[in-house]
Image (cartoon, rainbow, N blue to C red; front, side, top):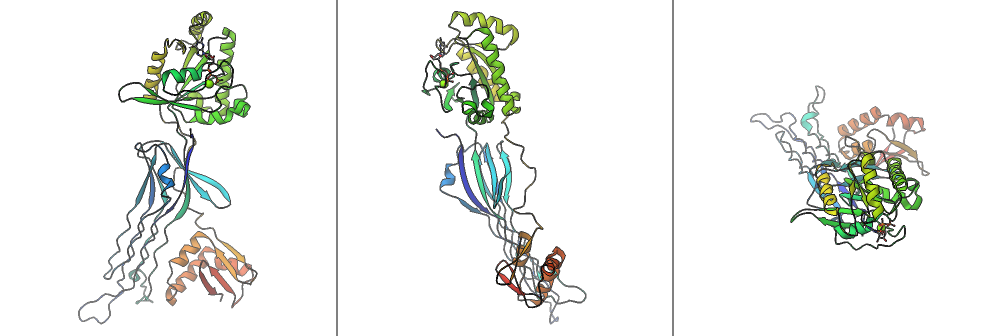
Length: 421
Ligand SMILES: Nc1nc2c(ncn2[C@@H]2O[C@H](COP(=O)(O)OP(=O)(O)OP(=O)(O)O)[C@@H](O)[C@H]2O)c(=O)[nH]1
Ligand SMILES: [Mg+2]
């Protein structure tokens, strides 16, 4: 049974449309002012959680998603149409990570509610038409901006939600027996600890159309949060459940039952304090044993809400199941980590790097610089002048000088090559 569903997809925002060069045409005016329209913005890619999906399988077949590009501007200052946004639906509970080169991946969002959305790749801005570039000295600008390329990125999707309720407790408490009674699952049951080695899932039907998913977590021992008995792996699964059922072993003496309860709670808290805030039901199992009945009376004095059940005879099981179902209804979907609130650009916007290559050329790299180059129409001297001005403002020019660039040296930015002057 798979517990962590994963997929990797690539997303691309639509490129912005190009701005254009055009002139106003009026009767009796041979050549009017600049009137080139702006390109439309590229569409953005969003991820949206929906309860209609429960796995990430469909991403095995389709891995690449791009939003529509913006249309180029028109004459008479007409703007191009913007590209449509693209929404990719993912199951509720999907964690969205952005892969980064040479750096750890970044959590973009934890989509825990239906309808929760995250901007995954922003569309590029439309290029400005020549209507914007007229100044008192330049009345007939013969250039326009290219559209900005859309953002591109690689995302890793992870679905950790596996169950509404997690059964936790010490080894041999009867967790697997209970699972086999309340669901159609047939886990291994035996009279020794660590029978269950992997979490087991079961679907519990509570009505014609109602059910919840329960997970039988392998027994936890002291030190579980540090990995004892593989406890850390099991606790990770407990994190994503909405409700916990803490099952106590009624075959043990009262003092041991109380000590087990405290140990399990300490392990949950040590793994993640948020686990203790989860709605939790407490139940003493093996009530068919005479000593267990006595223990229950004592325990009830200290923990008034405790349930007494016997997985063997099914006594009290129905009550616990209904109580779990009620608790699930009102429990919030637990969050794994607080995600950052705002959209994070693919790379730090203003950072750039200048490197000198063995052939003597200088290579300038960086998101912003490369975008700027992509938006420039190098056939126009005016556009080139504007580009150089922007490089100066970003500090690229200064950095080139510091690195010893001289007249005639080659400077490369993305696919473009320039001569330093
Ligand atoms: N008398 C009695 N025995 C029970 C009851 N429930 C479970 N047992 C027995 O307790 C032993 C352990 O049961 P399991 O269901 O395997 O226990 P577990 O909590 O899943 O154990 P691990 O997988 O090792 O963590 C088995 O021998 C069961 O038959 C019960 O209600 N009454
Ligand atoms: Mg078991």
